Amino acid sequence: MKMIRITTASILMAILASTLAGCAKEKPLPPPPPTAEEIAAQQREERGKRSLMEGIRLYQGGNYFLAENRFLAPEIWEASTGTQLQALKYLAFGYCVTERYAQCRYAFERALQIDPSFKLDSAEDGHPQWGPVFARASERPTKPSTH
Image 1 (cartoon, helix red, strand yellow):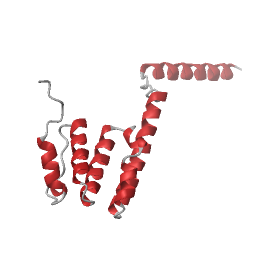
Image 2 (cartoon, helix red, strand yellow):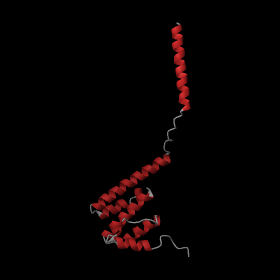
Image 3 (cartoon, rainbow, N blue to C red):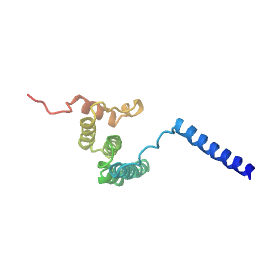
Image 4 (cartoon, rainbow, N blue to C red):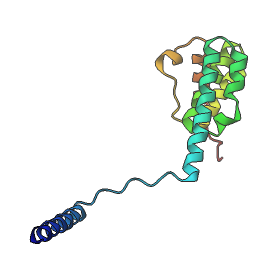
């Protein structure tokens, strides 16, 4: 019987020591779950990117008018600025390829209104159709004058 008491006491001491050791080394709390607003924003971004990717696929396949419809889809304009800028860039490319240069320039101007630091990469900037149009759009003020 004495042996059982020692064993029970030993077990209780081990549990107590383990519990106290666990308190000394608190584990960091996991991050809080995303809010409903954060989830909704993430879902809008995913829908916008899917629409953008579909538009790029259509554009690359030469279906410029169908691509235009994708780039103008509401889900793109509910997504992030980066997604919107990519849509405007490809929209401008499609306009230039189909010789609608005024719309091409307007799409570039709109991208510059959203982000004045918007640039084309070097290969895009040197393109004979939309390179000069982008250069002209870049020269225009992106914000209305206060004078």
